Length: 259
Image (tube, rainbow, N blue to C red; front, side):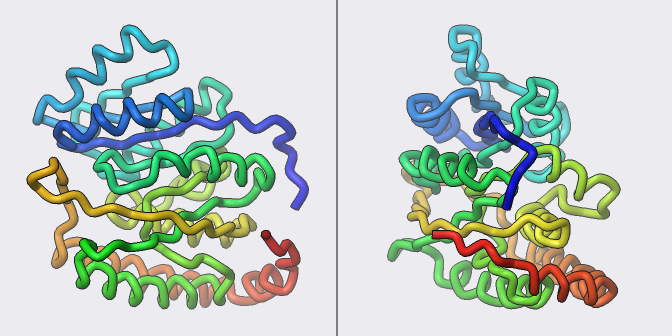
């Protein structure tokens, strides 16, 4: 997997919508292990961005992008990717603002991306006892559909939000795509990057579900978001069938065996 990107430059993107006090906690922790960081305030109205905006006046490697209206996670990340591209940053580690992800794994993910700059680095969640069983079991269904859409090409988890993406390629494959701006973002981008020739490198990482008492916030809605994912997978399966010969050829050419 030879890349034209000889000197990849990575940033961390943290999309945030009404994240509460965990946003500041997450940003402070991320800044200690990696810079630059882009925080996208995605139409929040809880005031959680105030302290982060103040931090940005003192920290030149912290960039705060404020979207007046909520665009959804995908919309927020794509807006940040456009900003990153303007700064000539080539790759982005997308990291949730809700305290679920291991900050200490950011450098490990980025190091893997530097070694394989054409790949997408996908986190595979290691769940703790506190993880909602319905969420853990439900993602198995989505993962099966993603395996089908990629002919079992190696995307181990279709929904986990801790990933490293090549920026220009991500923007290219999603340009003009219907959807991919809300909860379907992680699924759509992984599948479409695979179709475009990016192999997945899967890295296990622990995930923590924070309680409401400790500031945990979830905007996932079971009925709404599962319906969205059902519609998305239906469309992706049809599109995968239409490009089946090309998918088969790519599967046959997949020769990189990641460590």
